[in-house]
Length: 407
Image (cartoon, rainbow, N blue to C red):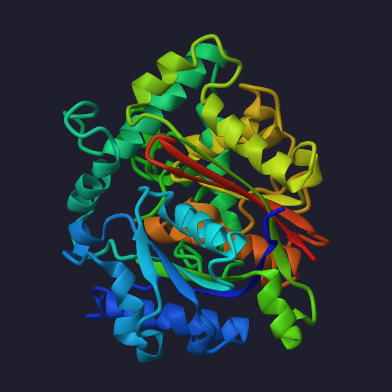
C-alpha cells in the first residue's frame, strides 16, 4: 500500500488583492504564500524536501516562466530544494498536488510544499480572455468569438438543454448561492460586492450577456492570488510527533483523467452515454473508490470547479448528487446550501471566491482540509469529516478529484 499523505497546513492570499496594481509580481506572491503556508504548518524551510508549483499562464500574463525556481529566489533557505512547475490549465494546482503525493507515496521525499500561483490582472479583461483561450484547441475552436470560455460553457449548456432540457434560472441560482457564500469568506474576491435581485436574472443592464446563454454573474473572476499546502507522509510524522497532535486532514482518495482538447470531440464521444462528460464521472468515481466510499452521500461537502455556473451544474450530476441531467432537483431542493444535504462551494467557489487559475486546485484541497478539521471559520460545515473536490482544466480536458478526510 502507498504511504498515507497528510495535510499539515496551508495558506491562501486575499483574492481581492490586485498585486499588479500594487506593483508586485510573482516574487512577492510566492514569498507570501511560502511563508504563510509554512507558518500554518508549523514548519521551517529546512523541513521541506521538495516543491511543486501549479501555474497555468505565467509567461502569457507576465512573461515569467521557470516558476519552480521562484520559491528559492525569494526564500533563500529553499536553495537547492528540488522544485518543478506543473501546467494543466485551470487544473494546474490539482496536478501539482498529485505530483507531490506521488513523491511521498513512492518514498522519494517525506515533506512536500505545494504552491498554486497566478497573476492575471496584469492586462485588460479582453487580453486576459485571449490568454486564457490558450487552454482550448487553438485555431480549431472558438476562433471567431470574443470570450472563449463563456462561449465553450454556453455550448455545454446547450448540450445539456438538447439532451435533458435546461432552465437558465437554475444557472442563475448557482451564481446567487456562490456569491452569497463568499460573503462569509475573508479571502473571497467578491465578499464586499453588492448585488440586486436583477443581478441574477435575464436583465440586460444588471446582468448582461457575455457569450451565448451565459451572463455576467454566470462567470468566475479574473483574479490574482495564490494558495499553498504542506503534504507529508507517515515517516515525517513519526519523526515529528509534536505535529501529529490535534486533528489532521488526510488525502483519502484521488482521481485523474485526461482527454482531448476540443469540446466538440468530448460531446461526440459521449453521445448515448448517460453522462455528458463520462470521463469526469469516472475521475470522481476513482476518487471515491480509492477513498473507500460508496458514493457522494459519504461526503459532508464539496468544493467544485465553478469557472462558470454551467461547470457547477454539470458537477452536481457527475458527482451523483442527482441522476444525469437532473442537477436542477438539487438546486430547487436546497441540497447545495450550507446546512443542506451536500453543501457545494461553501467558500464561494470560483465565482464568488475568485479564480487565480493555477492556484484553484490547491485552494480547493486547502478548503477541504480546513473543513474536515473544523478550521473553515464562518463558512464551516458543521460536523464535516469528509470533503470532495473537483478541479478541471479547459473544457474538462484535465480532471482531478480528491476526497479529503479527518484523521
